[in-house]
Image (cartoon, rainbow, N blue to C red; front, side, top):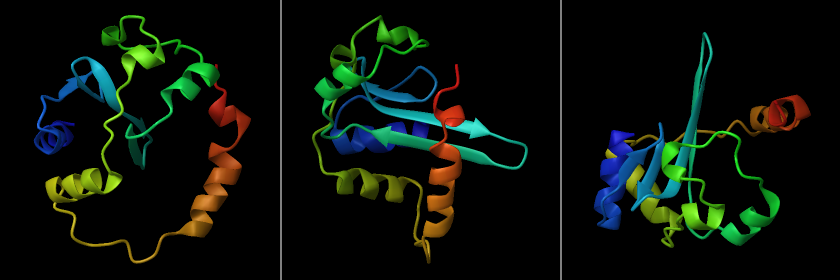
Length: 130
């Protein structure tokens, strides 16, 4: 997270804070959320950046989370989130540089992705754990 923090602070020319466990925020407003899942033989780390997201739609379709970081302070999605309003290519370039990523994936495993999306990540027991 510290690498992402430094890369985004340089790109945005703004102080970027690591908040909660893996959120990135500017002035207490979240613009990036990240999560991880660990197994005995794997680590899945994924994240998102809000660039031009319709936060109003989020207000209409998502409930307030049952667990929230302290810095959320009970704020609504609209009062808690920040769109960066920059092209995705700028973030991609900054992250490629900070991770010194030089090699491209030779082939995207579309069959595996489709299978996982259909049979695991699209399943109710994955998405609606309560």
